Image (cartoon, rainbow over all chains, first blue to last red; front, side):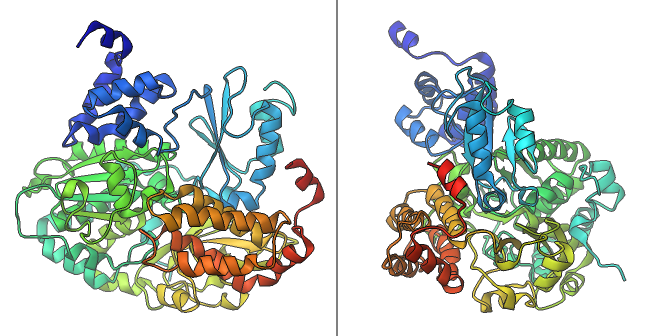
Length: 167
Length: 435
């Protein structure tokens, strides 16, 4: 491999490679670990850049295009930069009945972002998500790893600061 | 006599997880010990067949029959058992309870199921957002390896099984069993044509069984206590107990284990406490977002596959979503249709292009732009997209179920949207804020 290619294709970190190789140990061929590998790199870097994608594809002995077809299929693989904290706001039917649209408008007003956007300070990305499987406690959202139940105006103020504030 | 509720017997009031010591202390892994000491795989299969257990993931296929298609000729090569823990059907929140409160019950069920089909590798395919459940399962699997319930030569029988947790990366379609297999292989989650069925050619082309969490959780109890005991748990035609749930504007939304065949009224009124103060029941989806509406006249039906089917719907996942009189039925169905349109894998045209079309027509009606001929358009879509066989998998037909039944039961509400060129439920302030 030429040195130019080495420079163009960034090397995955030792930690990332070790985690990917652990997955490779129990699949029959490297490409079978594609989703795990994407998730591992995303866990380290927050998202999967074009450069990361190429590096993962090379490690898995597959084309970057094929890997991108997989990466873009799954809504929780991020091919664009995201904020430090992901807000997954459930918008499926039980949460819709309980007013998730209103909650979305309040979050958007508080953080000044539309669904899919990231705050200017890079702290939050707001993403609608399918049914989170906690419909008896609707409406619900996940902030990072934490599930919040029976979300209301007051809780949103607690989590993200006051209406129209800077979060 | 107190009801026998095997699936939730270890579920604590505070919903804290049951660890291996507590699980074993309450008789856990006795079914596994019993089977390993005294039962052949064929004996186990016969027990599950005789129990009349049907799949709890939504389709209700008889579990023993599903397993019986796995080749048992002893030819070399892997066989796989996969637990479908990709719970994402709108309005469904039952598997989360079993995963978070009693992970060992699932794992014991999986070991016994894998033993029955002589699988040597098992996977738990769990949705990405179920982080707590995935952690608990990984810990539980490690505990099982330490106890000799997993790994080489389980309990000295010569039978070996490895088990892995695969956390997914999103998309509802992964819950379709052949799409799940594609995803587990690291690919886009496109469903596959059947035949060949997964039992013969599944994960990496090898014999594979995919079962829902709740289905597998029944297995230890059936193996330990027998088919007759299991059949007697149901109060009607179907065997066993079932996790039933209710969400929407009811007093006490929740999820409860009850005998199969429990009347709907007992769940909706007895457990969920009836409608919230000031709300009236208009209808409900009996088993998640891809089942047809039922209405008040169906409240005394038993929750079992046949009865709900005869009433024009499906028991599905057994978790009901209630439509109240202050929620717009068109908006309700539009929300579901947008979900299904978004979650289409894009493989076949009727689903990829048809569902967004239906969602667009519903949006037009809901937003006050509906035309009288839109009703006929929706009915045609139901007719063509809803027919099994016109699409690659069951996603699009499922998407049509709430729509077709809404057109039947709430037709006047669709007409009012169109004639009034507005949603009668939309308050002006909300409509304004949305623009």
